[in-house]
Length: 478
Image (cartoon, rainbow, N blue to C red; front, side, top):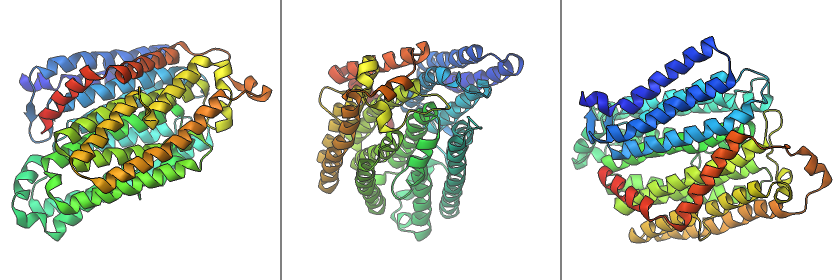
């Protein structure tokens, strides 16, 4: 019975996916598909406090249901809800039938939530594949449009390659240690001889390489700008938040379980990846004129910031990562939400000139976009500033001075390309640009953006309750 209660969020999501499949099979109605998507997501959110009553609960050997897993599951579900609302108006302009989009969205969400609770390489791989396979189809969903198809195929090929690398690493670890369970791996690693074994280190390197593809870390980042540019805006909002957030949550659990901070080769590898991701991501973003490509390179840098907190480790590092992810979810959903409500499958508004003078036609949207960009830049009085300050503090406490210097340089570089977009928003519009904006804004998209704006303002000026809650969640992982 305890197993059943602990698994309630996952069972609800699975049943919701099956129900939506039946609804779509019998009734081809876009609005009904959206409602049938939102109901299981909301029910799943309601199941989380019930499941929290039996935590921590181990479902050997694959899953562990604790407050950390439930927190990230809730975060993923809220993000999926926001994406569904944003995608509704976007998909109305699609020539193809849009109902299957929501089925794929629910399946991808299920895969992401499995990753958040994984405690074993098998559940890791299953969750990752459920998420990735759904993402292939979501990225190429407007199948008559060449950019979307290209983005889907690129992600398919590179994701397949990264899965092969990941599997090879898992095989090496199993051959050396005879277990795929994170907890048992930790116990075996306490014997110093194994941690210096070449097969173990090679396996670990392959696993990190495979996950680095999913997280767009340098040098595994080359797919990111092309996929972001070609894919539908709401799908990119999902990819950059839910997909990457779930993989990072899994990596953080794995790092803590194997006491990664005590293994110098691992910390050196992560430090180098963080350093190059911050510098390369920010420098390449400076050269772009496409909003999606700027945000793609920016995401590489932000994942580098998070890696600094991972290397710092300890309770403050875990708190910094968790708080930063919450803020990153909201700011990126807000930024891509603005792009989504202004775009359609036939015409994505992604060039910098498309946003010139937005303030004079859509002041609320321009204000929302400005606030999300300032938050991504880490300007004071925004939630992003507090998230970045958290990471700075964690790196100071761990005395990671070279990485701290890289963080400061990267954050300074980031100001330039975020300000380029903000300046474009407030320039006087040309007559040609005025004609291409939609005459009215969609209700669902506006509702999602309003909620995201409210959260950004709230956590920017009064983050105390969220920080206290995250401290409690972080303690359950340590």
